[in-house]
View: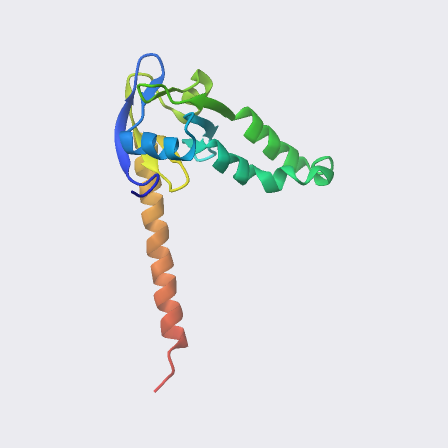
Length: 161
């Protein structure tokens, strides 16, 4: 089984809870038997869910730079962003998580609305459906530009006859 792959539409209930798709629940419990995860609001407007060990690995390098933190406004802002926009949560026995109200507002995940839960290989992201569709369009546009640049580069390198 591939960890954290695929996408599903789900519903945030009236209490701000989300029942995760079973394949993602299984992937999280493979990483941590307790079901503890980290919720993190992304700048793109989605909510990321990471296994605790993955989140710690992502943050490790930056947190080792204590000497630079005091002198760098950018690093302090990044610490604030991760500190204020991250929290731990435990997947319930029913496979649900509760999304804090401030995170729902920031990510436009309204109660009683459909959302997209998308695997990102190291965790999952929860997206407002309209934002997800815009993100898919942005990914597609980027891939087309990248393919065109690759083709143009290949043509430029071809020896002249």
